[in-house]
Length: 261
Image (cartoon, rainbow, N blue to C red; front, side):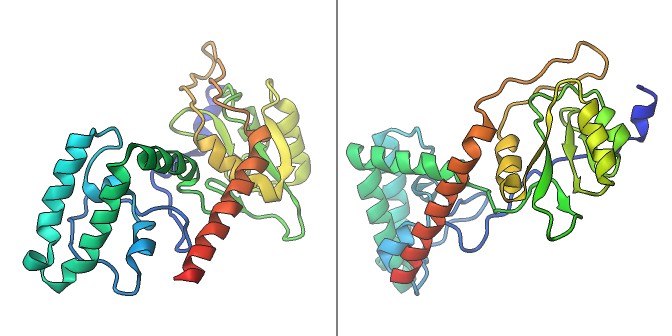
């Protein structure tokens, strides 16, 4: 078995996730120089919702009131219309509103709770992260590996090598191409799993399941050397419908916000 493992495809998970344009998620600033210019097509209140307030001020979410005030004053000086000119007017208003939220303990607590809900959804596009669809468009089923339970035995990749692969970070199996092998091969792969970690799931739930799985902690698996399962944070099969509903609610909320602008 170990000798055969060298022929199994290895894949590397993507390190960044794309957020769609119609996104309910606040904008993140990473390695971007600050500019004192806000969108001229947005009101100050709607623009405020587009930003992560901590990133906007260049501080961490654990910053104390002194750090918040220092960051705010520094940016406000740079963006004051007397210094930055007319272009700084809208951004100065946004900074004022951001500071009014973060400097108020009650408002900040409410904001942090809302951000926690949003962070859970950040990066989710509604499309599968790992697997491509090669099945019939009429097919309503999909194949999914619970990577937390997987022990890296490689058997599924041996029986259905076009459908399954061993990802290179943790050494666990995952589906990379839906229905790339005949169904009888896939069923043999499912039956060969010693820990029953492969399931047939609803295609409509596949994207959410793959995204939720990407958030689960998984240790490295050493083939043939005392394999153990990972530690589950939550049961994604129980969480998937609630997660999908939260995403729909967030998108509806974002659509209403854009409609009012």
